[in-house]
Structures are given as C-alpha cells and as structure tokens.
Image 1 (cartoon, one colour):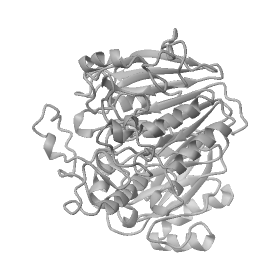
Image 2 (image 1 turned 45 degrees about the vertical axis):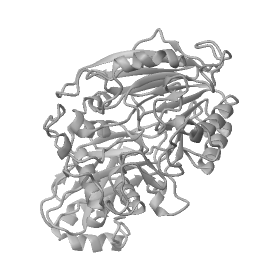
Image 3 (image 1 turned 45 degrees about the horizontal axis):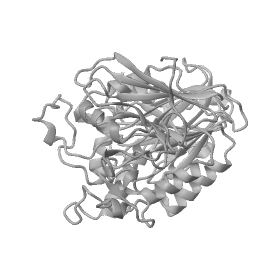
Length: 537
C-alpha cells in the first residue's frame, strides 16, 4: 500500500471502534484473522494506520530488537491493556530518529495467550543500515528504539564492534553495566550469553547485604508459566536494561537460570521432580516465556518441534560470523561427579548434531573471524593440578571439548566468547595447558577465549583468582569480582586483528553511570596467541 492510502487510513480509522478496525484491516489485506497466539499484518511502506484501544493502554516494558540479518530484524514490545481482550498494536520502522521517513510498518494483534507481548519481523530492509522504530496503540506511543541490520554476506566491512554480557541477578545490584552498553553509540550489536533472568525467589535476599530494595517478584522460586512471565516483566521495567535494548539489536541465547540452576536436557540440579512439577513442563514454559519476552526469531523456539533449535548462525559480511550455541538444554548430559566420568566419550555438552553443525559451519564459512558465542568456560580452570573448579563447565565434558579443540587447530581465526562464571578471563585455547608444547603467548594454542564478568551476580573474589593463576598458565588476564568488577566486554574486529576490551561499572550497589576500562587484549588474524594491546578504549 502506498503512502497516500496509508495517510488516508490514519485519518479515517480513529472515527470507528477497535473491533471495526480489526475487521476493516482484514478486508483491506492489512491484518489476518485473529488467533490465540497473536497475528501480524502484512508489512507495508509508509506509516501504519492508527489503531484505537478499548481503554487506556501503556508501554511499560520498553522496546527491543534482535537477530539482525542483512535484510530483516525482529522488533519487540509489550503492551499493558486495561481489559483482557485482543489488542491491535501498530509498529513503524524509519530511516531517521524523528520517525519521518517510515519505510516499513504494520499491525500486530496481541492478547493474553502471549502475555500481550508483540514480536514482528521487519523485512525487505537494506543491509548494514541503522533504523529507528516505535509502537502505537490508541493514544499510547512507545519510546523510540534504534536497530541495525547486518552487512550482506558478500560485503567487506572494515570493522565489526559488539558488546557481550551475561548473568544479571536483579536483587544483587543495579544494572549499571547495561547503561554503559546503551551509551556505546558505535556498537553494531549486543550478544547476551545467558542468565538474562534468575529463577531464585526474591524473598530469600531481603535480609542479606544485597537487600537494595530491588525486590525480585514473585517472592518464591519461579516454576509456572505465570511465574516466568512475571519475572521477565520485572526485568523489563529496569531503566538501564530498557536503555540497552532500545539502543542496539541483541542476539540472545540462554544459560541455566532462564529455566533453573545447573539445568541439562533431562533435568536440573535446582529442580525437584514432583515437588516442582515435571521437568519437561518447566522447561517448556520457561522457553515459552523466553520467546515471548525476548527479540529472538520464533523459528528457533525448541517448543515448535524437533526441527527447531536455539543454536544458529549470523554472518556479518566476510569479516565475521557468529555461531550461537545452546549448551544448556539442547543436548547436555547430566553433570558428572568426578574427572573419570567427565572424560567419558559418550558425554556431551552439546548434541553430536550441534557439534557437527558447528564444525561444518566454521570450516565452510566465508567469514574471517569465527566467533563462537556460548555459555560456560571452554578453557580449563583448575584449583589444583587435575582438580577442576566446576564440572558444570566444559571441564565436565572433556572428550567433546577435546574434539572441538582438535578441530579448531585446523580452522583459522577462532574466537570464543563466554559468560556464566561472573569473572573476567582472557584465555588461550589449548588442549593441555600443562604440556611443554604449549608456551603462553608463543605457541601451542588453537584459538582464544574472552570471558565477560557478570552484570551483577557474585563472582570469584580476587584472592581466589590470584590463587588459580599458577595452575592455569593459559589464562593471560583475569580480574576477580569486587563490587567494582561487574561489567561487560567490547570486541572490535577488523580484517587484521580482533581486540577485546573489558569494561567495569564503578558499583552495583547504587545507581551510577560511571565505569572504568579494564585491559585490552588482541589476537592478530592468522595467529592463535594473545598480546596486551597498545590501544585503549
């Protein structure tokens, strides 16, 4: 539909009620028939029609965008209606911040079946282009978000700049690090590597040193679909998280706390079968809420059937390709009890299908940098010789890790980015850090790993990190988790090198925008060793 016809709709629609609008949109081909799961009208050029509401509505949970391709991106929001009814929400995507040059728009009908969330796919877009977007319903208008598409696969970008983060426990502190990410205006994308929410009860922290007035509703551990929805809704009211979502597109994957602590395919350490229901049901409803509340393409929702998986690839021209893993729920074996069990070749952190998908993709991609975005530390982390810090990481799945590292030896420019452990690490990937064939910064490594600190969750104290160093010479840089050591990592990739810059919020105990830079480490293209960069951020 052209711009003139759209402008006519904007004048005519407010004169009729909402249900008449829905019927009229369907007649014009602008909206399909309603369904229980929400519907999106076909995308059009020019402004969206006005859509009246039955009563007052609000946009309390911000806006977000995600999974950017060269020609499309997911747009997200959530509307809070006055009554339990179907709600049409108009969306608009523009080439300017003032929302004058509207290049795509449509109407999405949401309802209680999807917790009044709105998720649309804006497509037929230009590659490597900034866009701005908003949502409207009745007199309510959302904040304006900013997003960016990826370059086309045959493009040759001079630079890719992205941030990555993980582990945001709401009650543990303020999300100041998210504010830092929001204010990095030159980022192309943000990667969230898991623990976007925490499942623990809110009441248990009210009398601890972390009782900051950030009450984590509901007060009990979340188990049901209503619980998970309420927790996601709470997180999306945080102004710093809202700002980070509105500033950049996100690529998200989950770790354990989006379902429950130390989860794996068939269960979880923090799930008691019977008392807390059936694990498969809890896993299903946690995934449902995740896909309702995050800007992830619905085709990757495992609830959609055996062929749907969260792991996926996103390419940024010939410069980089992200391989986003699901190392939690897709194929993980139960955590082992000892090193002998950890070495069992039949054990797997990811399914063999995902392993083959990953290695085949890394070998065949046309991109220079192969960036593996995943959850738990791939590098070894020992507290004494042959004594892993935790078997919930890849140290509990050593045979499969060995296969990956052996494969990485034949693949150029491998960078792994990791969350989960709440502590900053910069590692050289090597099959055996104790072997004489490995010399830190010189030889014997097959790639590098950058590990982000947490947004707020408690990590390893500096004294513990310092004590670990003698047993982990492949760790080139680490910072223990103090109040001032929560943050994120900014990665800058060029055809010649890839830099990782650690950034830390000055505090999580009070709202504050200030942050301090940590060290910057570099790997050159064609090399597998790290060096302290002479450049600062």
